[in-house]
Each structure stands twice: as structure tokens, then as C-alpha cells.
Length: 308
Image (cartoon, one colour):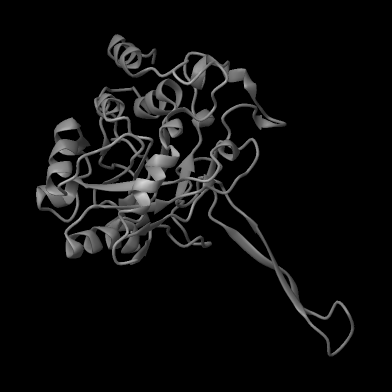
């Protein structure tokens, strides 16, 4: 379906094209300055480290629903091979094939386009079959370290997980910020917990997929107002599915990636982090979340770690 007037009005309000110059490729990551990182480092009190990535394995999250995405296919290509003669040092080596968005990952800005454009007004045709993304590919992200904030929407509502059809709106994000006693600051990376990951951790990949709770069409303005640098969730589709407006698929992707230049992550495991934050009574932390730097790729695996 054609994008409705409501979408275009939100797009006008959150658009960041030209905000950091005509040549900019990283969008809201410009908000992660050296001073932001220094302040993020100062949040570390105990040194407790919480991994947020799911294991990359053959029986991962993918069920075939997202065409072409495959779980990691791992194989050994050398087994105790004595390259320098018998009795010497032997080598084991591996190879893997996977969809770059198969597990815990970041979507790069060219992951989606709309009306012929990607971030900063560049044409969608700059993504090609041979070279991938000529601009704003995942390799442009570089070292990503900032303050992370856990917006525990499920926790704020007092439930283990949100209902599959729950659209997380601005009021939910406000309530989660109040629940965690969080005052957001420019350059923060927001992690939105719905509790949906519990299905995947229990082995029910179908229940984890669709339908799913997720971010509402009305949340990009909230992230724009707070100058959030990136957003990640514990769901497969990131946004509410089925969509709020019948037939309007992935509008939040388009608003974040194309209009705002806002990096977004999916399939993040926030369950242990929610428990750790509740135990320590604080929901801010140092977050390291540098993606694998595949040149020209529109997404990449990431193994983020929260340090409390």
C-alpha cells in the first residue's frame, strides 16, 4: 500500500536529513560523542557484565518466515591438521554461512528504503547486488560504546511479557523510564524489553515470531525528542506485528532507518539484564555494541555486553 498521510507527517517531524551535513552516513550515532562515552564509563560501579546476544547456532531463531535468512551453518574445514609435519602443532579451523540478521543483530540504515530513498536523501539504487550498500553500510558504524538504558516496559506493567498484540507507545516508554528512574540523555542507546524473548529461550520459535508486541508507529517521535542514538528490542520484528494500520508493514523501520538515521537492533536477550537491573536498582549502564564490520552490508551480528 502507498504510505499514508499519517506516516508522512511523522516523517516530516523526525527527519534528520542534513542535520549532520550532506555527506553524513551514520545519522544519530553522531550523538555518541567522546563526552557521552566518558559519562557512560562513569556509570560502571560493580563491573558486573551481562551478555545480551543469543548463541549463533544451527537451530537458532529462523523458521523460514523471513525469506533467505538462515541460521548459522557451521562446518569444520581442518581437523587437527599437522601443517608443519607430524608431531608438530596441529590446526583446527572453521567456516560458517549465515544470514547477517539471523540472530542478535543491528540493522544498518540501508536495511530498508521507502519512496526511492534511504537515509540523508540518497537514492535507493545506491544499494546494488554486487557491492551492497554504497552508503551507510554496517561497516560505517565503527566502535559503538555508549550509555545503555533499559526501558523495561513489561516490568513497568508488572507482567513477565507483553501480550502478542501490544503496541508499545510513548506512554509505555515514559512509564518504563519512570520505573527505572531514568532521565534520558542525548546519545543514549535504548533497550526496550517486552518479555517476548522468553518464548525463544523456552524453545518456542513460532511463539517468538509473529504475532509479536513491538514499537508503535508513534514512538519514533519519542526517540527523536530524546535524541536517542540507537534502539534495540527483544523481539523478532522490532515493531508491532500485525501492524497498527492494516497493510502498512514496517513503518517504524522506515521512520528510524530512512528518516532519522537511527540504528536499530533485534533479537536482543534482555532477560538477564532485567534481573540484574532489578537487583542493583538501576537501569543505566555502559553498553558495548560494535557490529561486525562487513563492508556494504545492511546489517550484522553483534555480541553486546552491558557493564553495571
